[in-house]
Every structure is written in structure tokens, then in C-alpha cells.
Image (tube, rainbow, N blue to C red; front, side, top):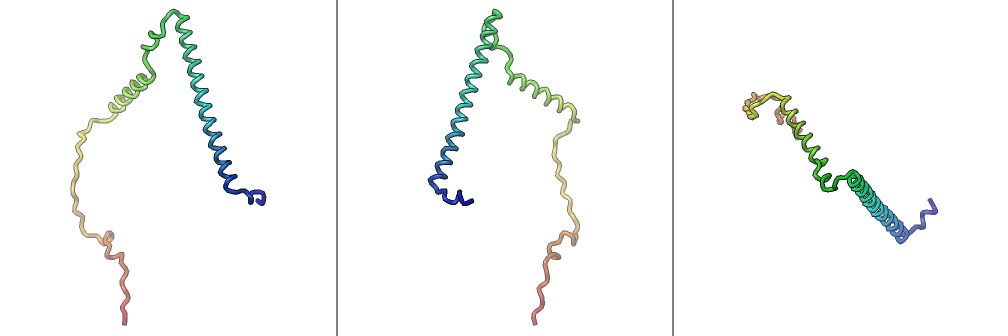
Length: 117
């Protein structure tokens, strides 16, 4: 504990700044690596399509993943809605008058003031 007692504000701010810069640098490095990997995989796909005798434009008209997910979601919604009975979807509110009950009366929860002489 004594060796940390003489650390001042300038040292703490320098350590915090170095830590932030390291995190920022690693994030930028990861973004660069992801972009390079995307370029490599896209280039490999284009090379495979060109080797097969097709064009890249023909491959772009294929169904995208987002369209597949949307179709599955719609199918599940329609399937789930068929499982339930059809209801009128009308909300009815009936007023019920309740008789007096001492259980819900707040007057009984108050304490009596003592009598002064």
C-alpha cells in the first residue's frame, strides 16, 4: 500500500490517457482487420463466380438473407395466429358496485390520539 501512496494526479491522468489510447487503437485495428477480411472473401467469391462462367451481376439478384428472415417471420406470424380462436376483440368494462367493507377502509388504519387531561 505504501508504494501507491505517492502516486499523484498527473500520473493517474497519464495512465488513464494511455489506457484510452490503447482501447481506441485496438478498436481501429479490429475495424481494419474486418474490412480486409471482407475484401478477401468478396474477392474470392467473385473469382469463384467468374471461374464458373457466370457473372457477378447474376449472383447479386439472388434472394438476400434479410428477405429470407422476413419470409420466415411472416410465416411464423400467420401460423401462430391460426392457432388461437377468433375472438371479437371487443373490450367490455362492467362497473361493479361493492358494498362497504371495513377491510378496505382507511379510517380504521389511523391511530387514535390520546386524551390530554
